[in-house]
Image (cartoon, rainbow over all chains, first blue to last red; front, side, top):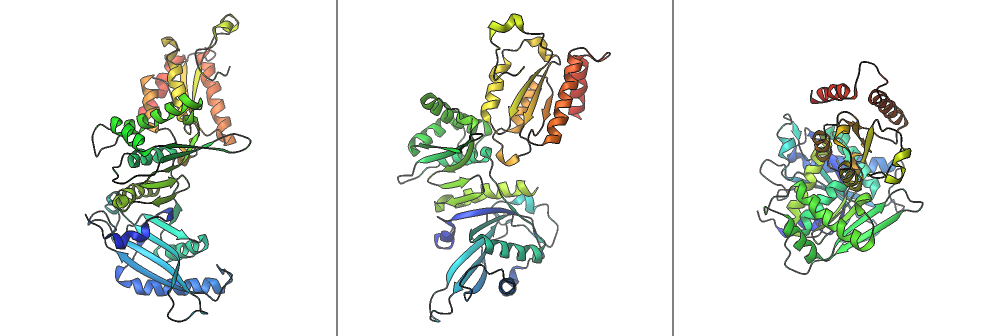
Amino acid sequence: ESVDPQKTAFALRKAWTLYSVTPLYRFRRARLRDYARLLSAFIAAERQKGLAVEVGAELDIKVALSSLAELRGSELDQAALLVQLSSRSQASSRNSEDKVVWSGWFCSMFGDDLSENIPEDFTSLPLFLSHGAESYTALVGSWFQKTFDCCFCRLAISPQNLSWMVAMWAGCKLDRAASAVELVFSVPRLAQPLDISYAIHPEDAKALWDTVQKTPGEITQEEVDVFMDCLYAHFHRHFKIHLSAAKLVKVSTAIASAHCDGIVKILHSQYLPGVLMLLTELAISQIQ
Amino acid sequence: HLATSLPLPSERDHLRPRIDLVVFMIDIKSKYSLKNVETSLVHVDASFFLGKVCFLVTGVGRVNACSVETNAICKLGKAYCSPMLFCELELEGIRVATAQRLVRMLQICAGHIPGVSALSFVSLMRNSDDD
């Protein structure tokens, strides 16, 4: 389906911190304005209590909640929900633009596995992405948890899942010159931590994946293993280091990059749904 | 006796006592450890697989650091008809309990427990796994 690039531009080129969210109880799309007001009041009250998030406490925080009908996989998915916190300094003129200080959005991209089995009155939006100060994330998160009886949990990405991502994304066809495919490993049990960064020319990586993948559009665990083993063997041949004994902590391609702490950056709008689908799957498996 | 891989160096063969149990350790955080075990397995005589081999999978406490697919490990256990123990070495309680289990298995494999042979014990373990 064609997704309006304007509407989804906000999702690109930002480092999003990932969470899995359990289904929301009694969430009503029609009440977005009410929710925005309640959340705004909650934030103001928490700041009054002394949990000020910024030194310049005169900043007025405005809350906006909006639905993004385009950001969903199928009709069975809920439309994405965007929460934005913006500030307007009271010192500036009334006509000045609000500056977005924090944004977070709930999303479900082909999340049928979860939404199929939940009871009435529950809304399934298992993936949450946040960008901005951690203190705001905590405030927004605790309001949602209190209001909709849901639970947020940081989504970590295992080396195994990172391997899937790099294999998938390195194999994507890109029309213009792409950036290198980079894998970052952390070596355990050393006196001083050591990071190894392995960069591969994107065309070489895609050529390797093309020889490994048997059915276009389908990826198996064996194919991912063969792809990674080739990369490890090549590195070992040159540097006599077994990368398979180190921990894969970050992968970077022209499509997107992902870090094991659950931080993702999506760079290419065409592949946004694909990346979100994978992340939704990870979120759902963490919830179940 | 601890070894990083097999085969054991032949120079010390005549000094080595009888081997009653071989425990292959696989660290779920290291794909290299799985590969290492796979290449070492071919150096073990077939008679050992009648109850004198077991796999110890470590690091299972940290699902988020998993580099090895659990299916691959379970397939290995089935292929070699040997039991698979899962543990987390970083937790003292589990470490101690696992060590006790291994010592128990070793006693059986060495023939110190009357009435229980290595082969009967491993078939007992396999039946309870299939449940």
